[in-house]
Length: 353
Image (cartoon, rainbow, N blue to C red; front, side):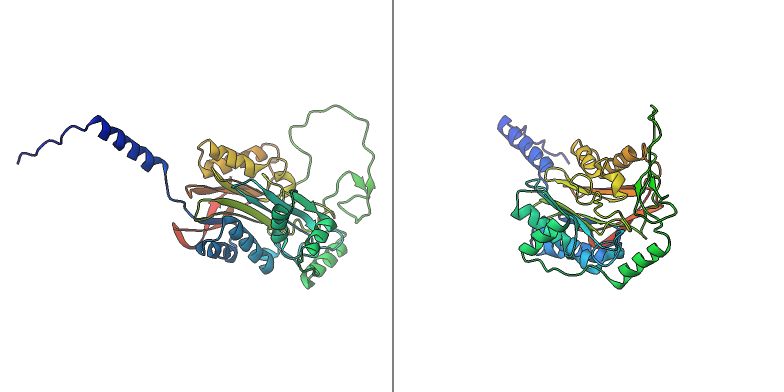
């Protein structure tokens, strides 16, 4: 059978055909997704339900982190655990809008259980980015947030046991009495005469960061319109020095998003992570076309170079819904995801560097 050859395309048709190829290559439907640190699956589902009702990515992140705050995920998000040296539980949280790059955050806030919602109020009802301490509590009270005790039987027991154990472990150094053996109050320990020396690695001791004394929910959501938001919430490090604020409420450290790229969030030793802005670094790498898996691995490597005992993880997702994570100091890092590719909340495990 002899087939007729197709007629040659006219120049006008060729231009239309090429235009169609370009459009098909460049335009893709938004891929809604929720991804968050650790197997906090109820938080993932709460955020997804917001997206399923055509709510915004910011709404989803607030709902997901709130779920974890009220559930007290792992005892390290929300009220009633991880008291500081004074026996108080304080909370850190942030939220970021990928459309505007607006950020709202609170650090060391007391007496308010829904820290992520106060962070959103900072973003939407002030021109500031970060409020801290009792002043953040006063701000929340002024806006009608419920004021309540953040202690629990668990947090009181944790504090009493710590005191009975001579305040061990704690996070002081270069003070007297010896903080590895005694409780405070502490005074500065005289330094020896200054001697010039080059240090390749920090002399900060490894603080045994882990699930028993610290955790954070870091969440990224992409909504039906393709807009991105990110957020974090934590009660910080167990027995921290009062007033300590970690990486969670710091934009670029705890989380970072960009509507043209995607987002990233971190968890781990916040005192170290905030020195390297790993979430920002991962997003900037993805902006160059790097995959989320490679971007997060590079973010980890930048920290490990100076702190080989560091414990932490970073996860990331781009606006095409590709996702990945990297970690260090633990065997593996689990993270939760739900999207059209994962119609049920799924926990994925990444082996650590």
